[in-house]
Length: 438
Image (cartoon, rainbow, N blue to C red; front, side, top):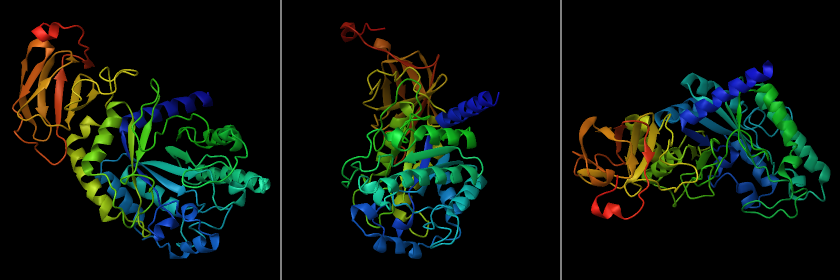
């Protein structure tokens, strides 16, 4: 009975996840003091005597969590995932396992508790990121010489995940990362020979996930513990998972590898590029988890606000084209990833409605082709204006009455009503050259 209730609760949470579509990833910790990214400990080969004192300079504002929640809501996010501990081992939560945490050093506060409270007040779902690896253990880097330490690191991870799943009420998403076994090569550094090859075996992932399911039966788990979990996590690229498998693309504003605060970044995506990746994820059936790296005081800087603000404004006008939409039969699994009318933009679907985001604006009229069933009506969401719809040869439809130029700085969206759920149509043979395709 209890197992059935847990399965039902997680199924409902998965349905919420597939409806939400847009979330905020937050990489934050004492690394923000330096403003050179979240992997500075390893990538700059910093001794711990140089890195650990950064905790004393880590001073988040008292309202950082409320401000973060406000930023997420304004940008149209439905959930947030915060790094409770990144690879450098500094915990943003109070833990009995290690004094190197925000409650016992630096701020002297449990920052995860503040985060959870602020998100609940803002009506956002709560995600917790946790890195299994901890670079402060010698046994991670040299498992052959320190095998006992490697096992202690695993036990520490289990204990800290237990604390996270016990002390903060209901958690919606647990986002594992850093699952490389001790000694394995990881991006940006060399660690030598892995202690074992099997990731799940090294982290005792079966035992770990069983514990999480007992403590948080409705929480959604990602696939980075070495086990499949509930959803996939393509990183820095849009890549659909298998049939009906939930997935979520996580992506930075900059062109990787910087997830944490970068004081100076000269290689960032534009708002249009971020929107393109968002729509590309959603039209193929995935979510988009967009990353921010707050400063040491916990606030998002102007560099990221300059992207979040226009995305938020676009979502206020066009959110119905994102939330709760599905690929339907326009982008079938195993089909061509472009789909119909890709030379103009991308479709998202909800029932009999198709939402067409025009990244390549056609001017005053759009020719809809290779899509069915019949088009009943069309509307420009930015203005609410109804557009003229006329059938043409080869099963096409002319949609006219569009402004001569794009009506805003980001891609506009047409809401198109079909006679039924929309689907892609393949053209076969040469009869379309004579206008005879149906």
